[in-house]
Image (cartoon, rainbow, N blue to C red; front, side, top):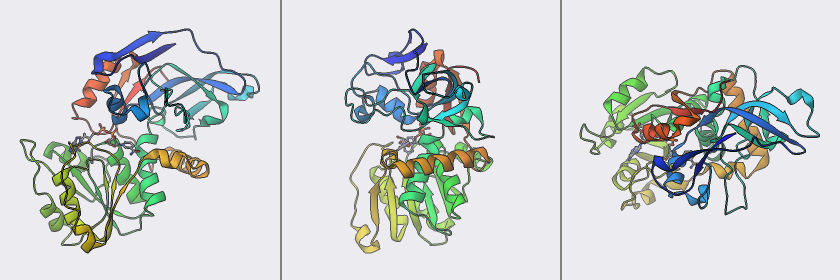
Length: 347
Ligand SMILES: NC(=O)c1ccc[n+]([C@@H]2O[C@H](COP(=O)([O-])OP(=O)(O)OC[C@H]3O[C@@H](n4cnc5c(N)ncnc54)[C@H](OP(=O)(O)O)[C@@H]3O)[C@@H](O)[C@H]2O)c1
């Protein structure tokens, strides 16, 4: 087996490929030959030592999701499962209650897990996307449907529109009959998004100028929405003036969900929230995974919708495991649209 190990926090150079004997499944376990592993922004943060709740202390292995083929089974597992195409349950890599090693990461060629957490892939599920859907679509589903109970006709503001989570949020919101307002930093990405079936935005607004400086984009929002407010923001940027602008655009009674911190935190005037009777709330996927029946229902729904082609992953690029450093460096340049995928084995 090959496994990516981070033995100190740092840049992409700390990602090491280590060879070890193939692991053998114990009773009730299966071994999955991974063929698709999503690369996430959280992985970059964990590698740099900015997300210790995920990584713990080095050494650790990154990776919060994956899919592949069962190639070995332990005792008590039916023979019929050998050769099955499965998606790792989103809870599988998370070792709750183990602060030293909170995640048993999926950046590796083979993964051992309880057979019950190897979810059969529904017919039609695209193999490359299979191991990439949790951090994008489950995150958006959990917040917008489970927590927010988004309604048809509401307007959802989606910053980082080109990210895998932003694209997923556009699909989730459209599924609920809501209207979507994508926010992206560059004109080039705005144009590319207009032509992409995975990007289901009713309007797209560019938030930065050619020199990368924040523009007063709230004026564009007022213009395209004809003075109407945004009911819900689903926001991973959460910075000073950016957040100020969101509060300006928010409808009375609206909600801003913060689920990431892409920009440096800054001072924000929260007083308009009083007048608008509006809310600022935090969201993390882990909340959904802690409620077993919701986690099961949500994962089943995401896989079913992806198999039907209703949820689609925009694949920004693929990398073999050996090129994991290049993958991280490419993602850090933030020129991509969608999701990068590690392909530890061919499907
Ligand atoms: N809370 C949770 O449970 C949860 C789960 C999954 C992901 N997340 C968060 O979701 C975010 C997206 O994740 P991902 O893996 O899809 O990331 P990604 O592919 O790396 O997306 C990054 C995108 O964010 C935008 N961006 C980056 N820096 C920005 C800045 N300073 N100001 C404004 N926009 C900026 C850019 O999009 P544009 O060029 O279009 O502006 C960039 O392409 C991350 O913050 C991640 O931590 C949170």
